[in-house]
Image (spheres, rainbow, N blue to C red):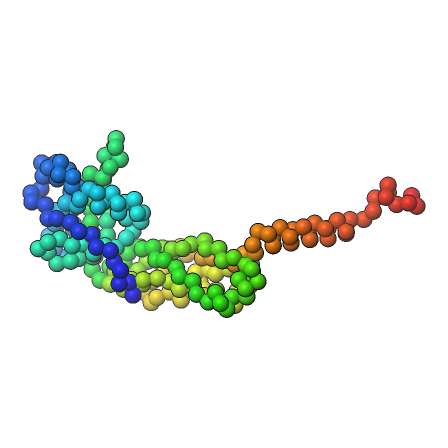
Length: 217
């Protein structure tokens, strides 16, 4: 289970409307609104620098946060919209949605690999190439896995790990229907090049002699 849901600290905004929002921006805050659930909408302000860092970290719109506002109970939220200045492309407002524990949401879950000591392909010099370090899953807000675990035990060079190879937590499923690749065990470039040379030499040996090469022609 995920125990590392990041905190998002905000301040309750006194007053609503354009005037209060402009005042917040003058104070280097980004105004926002928290809605949904069984509570009334809550106007908030988030420090500009904090929000910018979160946005630059990536996945902001698909990350579950633990919203902390003084005077209110902590609540799990996910961002549904970030409005930006059309000229400067800086955030000017955001909408946060409260989530019930039973709410289904899309989140990117990291993949952890194990079994390297029991992987013949790696022991022979192969390289584990990770295609998807994260997988987007449909999960329940109250039952979010901290990570997915993929085993490379028994894999030879050229073998792949697909999403069907991973035991997904109960109640979760990928957002992609097909059986996509998570990682593969590849031969190192030097070994692949040597194999190509061997194939070229074998192909050359199989080429029949031409009439010019035949001494009896």
